[in-house]
Length: 552
Image (tube, rainbow, N blue to C red; front, side, top):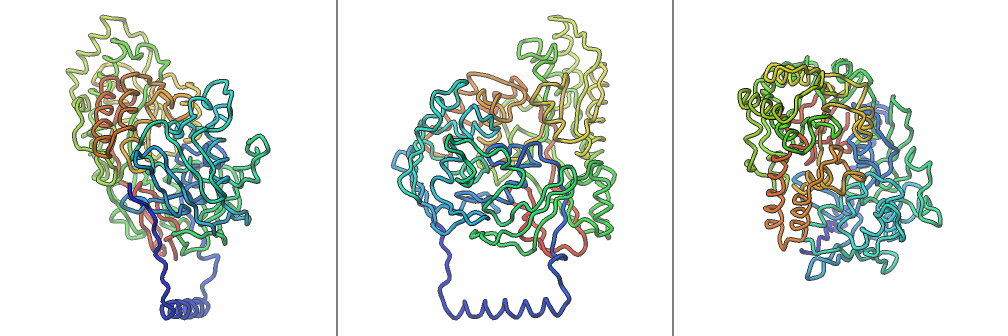
């Protein structure tokens, strides 16, 4: 792997003078035009984070979006999914890709002025990796030497032996096995730094941290009024690549979903909404009261059957029933009816997107995603011969603020019609509630199961969601555990090249079709609307708005 150092400093004094002159003139023009800072606060659609805003525990979209916006890591991702250095001056692997030496830039500070150094990363990573801290991003450190010891149920050591401080701005990462793909992980929030001052002498993070975290990204959290609004404002100490063109971002939390938010965009009371309600899905592109946007995304959408639901274990009966459910869903008809031309049929667990390394348009076993009601009935009847199905109903749970009521009702009706069983779509108040139900396995049925990638690799759709290690410290809410699958993930992680690794990951992906821990349903486009006054709307590689680019 080559040294990933990106220094684009422009030293020509003439150019600097021109920039200074332009900025000064621009300020005068802004003042003359009557513009104000308050007018440059961008109001966007948001949702209530499930957890406090701590990098090691931000594994769901609502909190993760905020954490990604107020923190910066060693590297960041370009729009095409490639990585470039942010806080890292360089990331240098040894010849075997087993030991990575990280050199930090020495001019970065947190928003409170504390210097960012090696300890800022090492303390944060050790805290996240230690099992007793119960951080949802713990499993991302499984590749580092010493993880098995700190992740033990009763750990006897508290720090990763593979993290070695060299000096204040240099540290080494020793992996369990060689990995050429390891640097791809380093832009994910699990690897963000946290201020040294927020840890006690035992390495435990201050309990209050995360409500209003001291951070190092382009914004800081100014306030968090739960279930109402999260306000971000500029971080004057930010040294990175994404200088905001606005004065801040307000995430407005709508308890009643996207319908009210859409009306607010039309009236100019909300600037950006990237979740189109079903009532507007066919008309939003022609709505003259808003600006509309639509492009392909790398997002996964599926339904996941709770591990405790009788008749759906990963045995012969359970697998037959899971296959029958998948075959009973008329995906194409539902997509046409509900999403018009803003969604596509799934071909795999990893959407076929050119920005995702390893994604492909065919995965062995994906014929189980085809609509075949007769085969679905046959498999259901085979399962009945093993054990009678005595569940009174087959409920599909979704969060009411998702804007997907019509979709889940259509899926339930398709299952009901194909298999002649009772199936109902049931809502819970919000995503936070649904996630808690999933994690605690309170849902005795099927639930909405989505994934937004953390970094642009096929591996990120597999390890954090379906590996055994991610059951207690990851996003494996289905509790799927398969030794063959885990072994393939390990083999891929230690491959000699990215291409070789991706081929093995594709084999692991195909194995999922034999067990269906989650059932792919559709691949959404990123569909959004903005107020007419909003400028600079663009989406990054994982279909999240580039908030720093927005202005009015």
